[in-house]
Image (cartoon, rainbow, N blue to C red; front, top):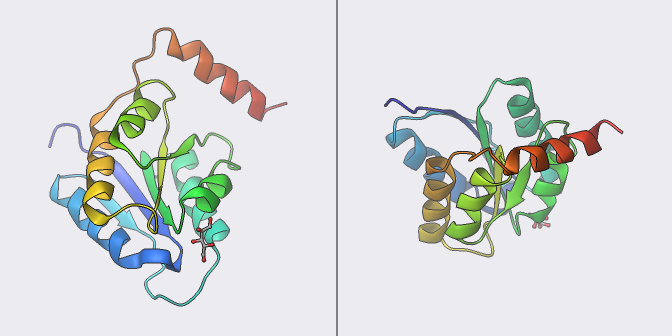
Length: 150
Ligand code: RB5
């Protein structure tokens, strides 16, 4: 695969089966997948999983990250606390494409209790297929980055 990316996945306990299915789906496309769990359905805390995946993306160990929790919201909030992370929650493919094209998002979060498996896989496909357009969007992303360092 010419455009293979290193993709890191994590979630809380809300739906580890959906996360595993996404990992298999993404790996089948030729991407390099690292699924950092959790591997059981024991109740856990989404901030630590969001942070762990986000730090891998921010450090350059992964190119992009995919996160799940019940709504996608909590794990997105945690990931976005890590400098360099731009993570959006998506329940539709248009938003998933746009957060790459316009916002240069490097992480995608989804709500496992909000959307179904088919929609989740379509959203992942839209996110991974899109690239940042740059141009007029470049200065806007730079403005986001500037907020982080104040
Ligand atoms: C866990 O019950 C739930 O709160 C969590 O998965 C997520 O929805 C938080 O944002």
